[in-house]
Length: 353
Ligand SMILES: [Zn+2]
Ligand SMILES: [Zn+2]
Image 1 (cartoon, rainbow, N blue to C red):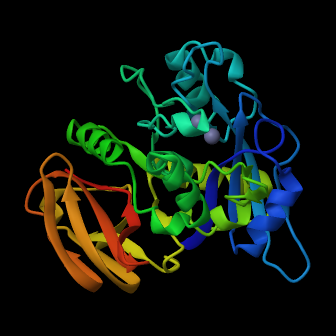
Image 2: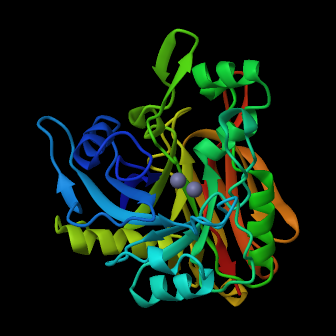
């Protein structure tokens, strides 16, 4: 399997971002990414899907998806990331179930964006979480949205300036309510994959007489990323884009905070009956499965069984864990960074049947 390191949930000048596709691709190359999904608000930009190459840098695959929400709803809840869709589905925003059905019918994958999102009055942002939880057919949840976490830190003007200037002192992991909801859905038998997103816009803010881009695209491309495993990379943008969407949909990858240390090389797999299953896969308890993990750097880790919590924990670079009961098992790893433990790797689950 080939590991690809990418970034999801990016806005361009076609909605409320600042840079455009080729410029964003150049930033991604400089950050060492392999793929990008731009997701402008309620617009699918056509004709931009391609492998971008810049002299002296690795190439990056850019794919356009869409972040769809009902714009006349106040506040504008229910943001949906639609990836791998061939046509604009923004007109279906009023009916989240119809929208999800259309994403799936077109071969795409839908993820609920920042499902629990704090209000941040200081930056004139409402809570933009998900409210229509009765829908069916989403591939998963955006468990870690960088800008949504930043909003949670902006509790007073001093905190806003401090964390805008030193974000890595605040950013520390996915929203706990989102993780709890994910575990609940998994424990109820759902197949729910996790993604992480940057929600990059490249906005600049005024601090008195100073104007500063507080979250440049390139900075965010080294922060909350998505690593996936694919069978092959062909160089054809449609084929490779579909393979990445398939990996995201089936949970063959992990949410990474690559700033403390790159997570490249992390692996989490299940062995049983002589076979090997990748993240997001199923394995029967009768196969006496062993969940194994390898980290590129030592980490403090927990294996979590959705619904009952931590099933095992420890620290180091390797894990071997034998589940004794069925359930969805996922892994969280943390590392010390800038004075405290911070989320580093959040795997997708194995479904032990
Ligand atoms: Zn959003
Ligand atoms: Zn967004």
